[in-house]
Length: 200
DNA sequence: TTGTCAGGAGGCATCAACTA
DNA sequence: TAGTTGATGCCTCCTGACAA
Image 1 (tube, rainbow, N blue to C red):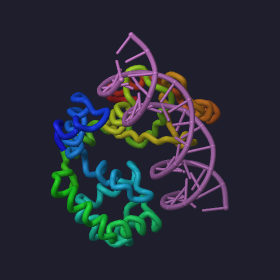
Image 2: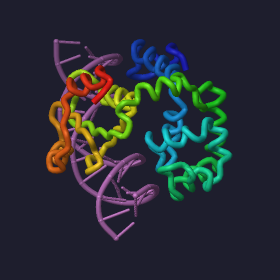
Image 3: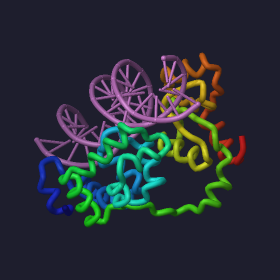
């Protein structure tokens, strides 16, 4: 695809066409975990994809793995392992993987941060955060990324194991549940303060 | 300038898988 | 087996780009 061919389509102007072409180019640089998520394998969302890529560093390794190998990953059970093994057995899916490889899409781990750096900044290790409402300046993905970089974990559901709820504008029912469970609440400013300070 | 359309973001409910 | 968690689908609202 190129801008010229796209602009011939209905409701597709120069600007949208350029953005689409750029987005396709950018998508090829997304991490392997993100690509795995995008394959649409049943039960493999963003979290499970991340877990899987920590053991299976490339699409080739995962494709060759047996369900029993996949099941060995903490958090992955027999249903999910079976779903993954079956997905890679389908010839149309094997063809898709080949085409993605040929197109230059990332299908292996490309480490860009050393373990030393990771450990140094992991002062939130063991802490679980839940985001609710719209944060004033940060996007959800950005807040999640910052917390994870500091070693914390972000989940979508409030439970007794949740340590902090980060509350934005128009919070949902998660805030009510957090209040019921007596979980500490943080504003975006407080969260940023903790992250900048490097300690809780 | 205005109406239309598509997509992103966020919330919520439900279901199913996983762990302890 | 209960509690926890993630996946999924649906909804609403908002924004930006396009066409007329």
